[in-house]
Image 1 (cartoon, one colour):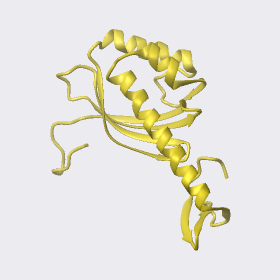
Image 2 (cartoon, one colour):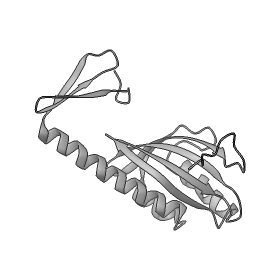
Image 3 (cartoon, rainbow, N blue to C red):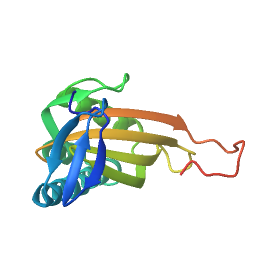
Length: 164
């Protein structure tokens, strides 16, 4: 089973048992392991949120690259180049094209080394923008890998629910 396969966590006595996809026991976590995992997840989440603020609120691509992107960054979005340099060139070009771009994190969470964010991104203040879901694999407090999907925000829907 790879590191990113879905797992179930079952409460069992004084700890947790982590089950793999096929139901096989992967590990029993002690209270100390659980606390360490929760601390790592909170650190990853806090750092990821701060990094998105640097990029999509403060609009500082250089600081983002220095503090937030791992050297061997792996990109899965089809329109963003792979690697740290490609990612930074992409965002520098986006910022040049849209100097008032802005991202607003609506919700975020962490699971192990993965952090996810639901973001309302606007290239210009007057645009309706896009709803985006991003998953980042964190490594030593930096974005090491990214998966993202998005869709335009629409004015009307088949229901009364917001996209956010």
